[in-house]
Length: 181
Length: 118
Image 1 (cartoon, one colour):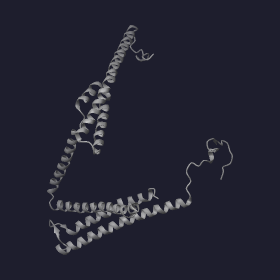
Image 2 (image 1 turned 135 degrees about the horizontal axis):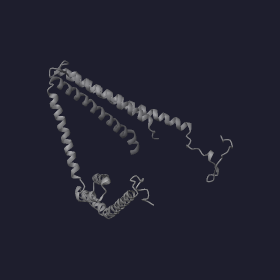
Image 3 (image 1 turned 30 degrees about the vertical axis):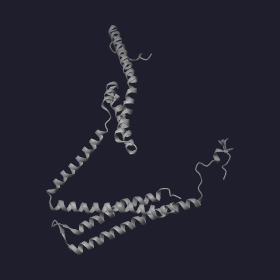
Image 4 (image 1 turned 180 degrees about the vertical axis):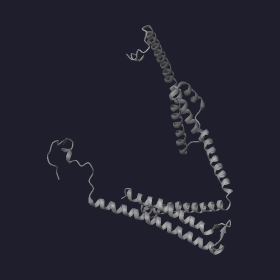
């Protein structure tokens, strides 16, 4: 019975209500635009004032957004650790991905009603700290091996150059051709 | 109708039939297709009627309001000695009609295109 009532009465009425809302909003917008146009026609000096007002409103919205974003910022110390340990070329990408996941966690938890905002922040922070703590070892190892590889390459280039000097020819081809053999 | 026995004629061991006999798309009867087409048209018509009803109600309400205000203030009342009173109502009418041309037509076409619920 309830299902039939819903199908016959509630759903169409909801649909009509939605359509009405949109058209009423459009009508009001049209009337307001005409009024604004008339006001500007009557007092052209008001146009600049209106521009400034609109700019100030947008600035306030932007600042509120910024403040909200800054309040949900991930903790700074793990960021610093990641910046120091990650290779420079990918550090921004990796940290950006971490931030994105952190923010999405906060946002998802905000939609869940059982948690206070403080505990949401704490949970996301703990997740971030955990991730960074577990990445310290592998990142250090990567850094050391990379340095060792760089030293190896430099040594090979030196050898190559000295050989070519010995034989009096600088252009002996690719200095890396036997690197992986 | 069975296809002619030509090479390659692959056997489907699981169904004990030939692959060529297995229809790729589940066949729908003409009756069902006809029902679906009728439902699509009905949905589009319902959408059109709903939009037109709301449009008519709103335009009538605006017209009545305009009449009433004209009765009190006079038809040639000027805001700021420049803006005619009737311009405001015309603006509202125009916005609603443009909205119908864009959003109404879109939702009618959408109601026709989307799969009807049985």
